Image (cartoon, rainbow, N blue to C red; front, side, top):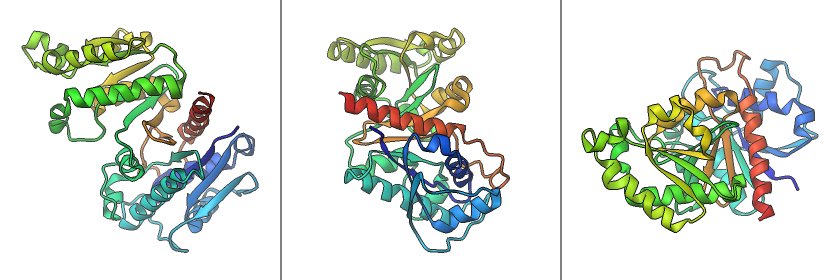
Length: 321
């Protein structure tokens, strides 16, 4: 059974429309999935014409949104592009919450534009969590050689350390554990956890979060989930340099760049962003709007393709349970 997948158009001034159209032109690929695109019609028409791609919509559907003639300013942040991207996401969430669709694959958005457009969220994950009514979610990156969960999403670095609490770690790691079993299909998950401080605090000399918060939380989680192998906090530099991540089904990072930098270096174009903990499946490419190359016809749709594959795969893992 195919997942009924909604693709949101993303920021209409970025590379989102281009990678969506390049993906949809691959009839052989599209026929394998049940795809519906949420987008203003003139956006699809504009970029298809610019790319000299003729789309045959026999194998996918379109849900039109917004005004008939949305203003496109390729490469620029605008309130209108943010509004359109936000409406597409909100509509997709409503459809999935009503069980009309099973999954959402989101093309990249600009957080700045999203807020200018009236949607006060730091990004997709926060918006999906709030509008779906989920108690909590966890941002997860999926790759062929590495999976990465995150304690936080997009806070400024100066605030990230203060977010690390026993309650947060209990919630986020529990979501990752359940997702590994339900969504990824791992019977006995193994998770490697990264320290917050350099050298894991070096016995408390350069930070005591590992001693006071992180390792005690991990001990509680081991008692709660008997089939979960959960490490103590690893110093992040040595963990990646020694390729220790290869021993685990998922690595859990304490803040955004700690996990994203090595993930993108390891996963490359195969990386997929996944929001664990939602009622429905949500994935996206692991890159942004790339305003600098928008409209040039050189954007690579590979990560969007992988996101569609992942959404269908995760849905099928769920219905098998």
